[in-house]
Length: 130
Image (cartoon, rainbow, N blue to C red; front, side, top):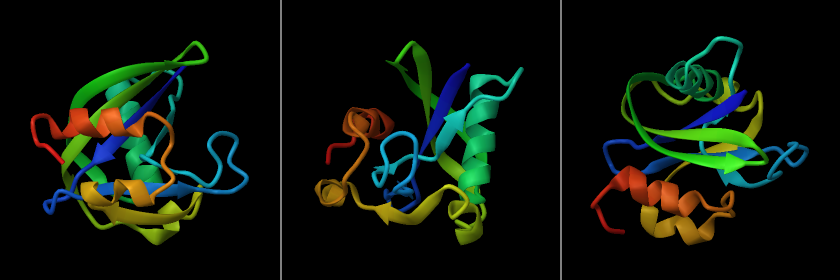
């Protein structure tokens, strides 16, 4: 089993963050990327697409792989998505989260993010400095 997460960037260069519920099993109350654990037989990318859609209502048209991290013997794969369809659907968000925000990279310090999010964001932006 593994997890896949997606750094979703809109055309204003803002990042989609979801706020985890206070009762979440990991990182309660913190802001993070859409994502979650794989289903049986899924590829890393299929998992990323499904989780992004389930948690936000957005459909990923194109994903770019950016990184892999290990957490307690489990791999977490990170993708970037700049090409997506739809609007964030609050009903989808509220299944597992309490809020969502499109965050400007210059405002990241104002959010209690899951640890090590910033290096992933920097990779997602590539050479773009913030």
